[in-house]
Length: 181
Ligand code: HEM
Ligand code: HEM
Image 1 (cartoon, rainbow, N blue to C red):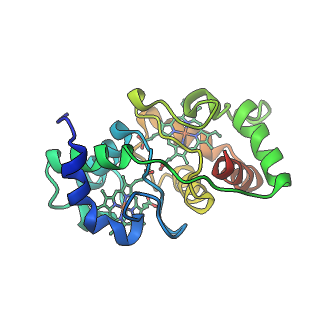
Image 2: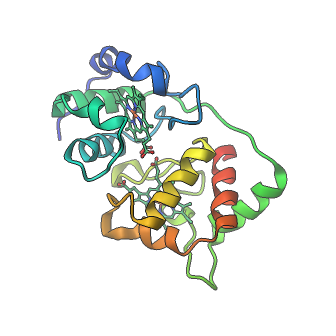
Image 3: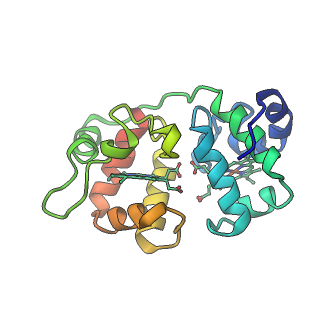
């Protein structure tokens, strides 16, 4: 993988701003926040959109002409920013916290914390994404996509296995929880 240049990435990121915001804090929850996400994870997603391993109609044309260096620069830039925090209702947060920290032993859902970290910051070196402060609608949509196999770029199908075991209520609750985490 090429080493990313933050300043070069900043210039290249102008075309991403309309959806993801100039600093990666997307103005709308229709688009995931990229700010503060791990560079390795971001770069992998860009490569996956380009190869078609991850499918999305809006992202496909964005990455079509990006070189490996472009992707590394863009990833380095967004990773260098700070994700803006979110806030949600207490009830959902409680239920979500339970799943996030302990999983559901009856249905075999593991604790999200095991990979996405106690503070939701993920494990950048392992390309495990940050979930804290990410928009709930986006997190929920990804869990649904993993559960249905529509998103299938997760190593060893770990997220597909997990999401397919989750109830609707659990998906809603954990998505709400991580936004405020
Ligand atoms: C998702 C980067 C431009 C719409 C993503 C993701 C990355 C990314 C890394 C995955 C985030 C994650 O997995 O957490 C970029 C870069 C751009 C760019 C570097 C500029 C070169 C745009 C634009 C739009 C857009 C202009 C809107 C027209 C979306 C959407 C998703 C997404 C809808 C979610 C895809 C899904 O649900 O799977 N983007 N993006 N992006 N981006 Fe972009
Ligand atoms: C990706 C949620 C448990 C490993 C993701 C994403 C979400 C998510 C929403 C997509 C992030 C994005 O697009 O920005 C959850 C929840 C969990 C959970 C709610 C608990 C119920 C785990 C566990 C592991 C794991 C236990 C490790 C065994 C990963 C990896 C990815 C990922 C490696 C990145 C997939 C890729 O490269 O595209 N997770 N996760 N997750 N998760 Fe989890």
